[in-house]
Image 1 (cartoon, rainbow, N blue to C red):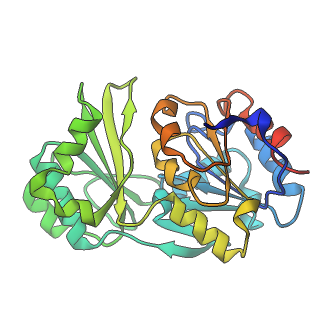
Image 2: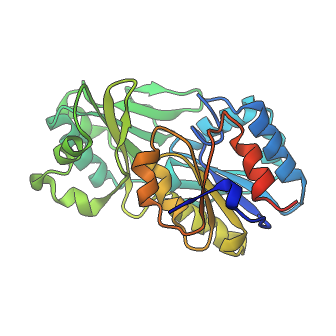
Length: 295
């Protein structure tokens, strides 16, 4: 049974690994209070760092950081970014982990989505496809309405993550069965699937897919190793199914923010040093500063 954050003890946190959307940012914007608490944490000790670990592309996360006025902490190597659920991870502006799909895996995944009439969006970088592009030239390509022949000639080894979406009233179990069906058993061994999300507001379910073994826990461990940290000096915070792996990294202290995913993810987080906090829009970052971080 996880405890309320009011029961936490003060810890000398050197690295704070946090999810972005629903954890640090709210609807794509970092609230002023969260920003101020992040600055307070970073400026309290020269060795303290924040990692923003997201399913987003790194440049997409960076745009949120810049809009919040935190860009200088990136240049000072105090804020670092891990994108695609750990598939592309940076430290001091250098890549410390880089694991895209292979071309063959991308092809298998695309064809399955096409045949099953599932919206499949693939995320990569530096490739010009017939998709919607961000200003940073990352790829956001939806293959649902493209001819099957298109797949064979437009594969890329720079694909880091895929997202499956099934609109309308379909259960999480149904979506998973559609993609990981008996005839596609090989997918189970090729990909790392997150727990499916349910977006109640839009009446759809979706889940994110990475190359096998890629998840946010991989990113947390990469930073612990690269910075020569002890897990007990690491704080991990998140709110959604793709945060479960990082929240369960052995030895870290974990924070689960209040969210619509709580009923789904809380039973899956087995880390004994896990605490429950308020919503990020309702004082959660100040709670963490007051109850957990040793200043």
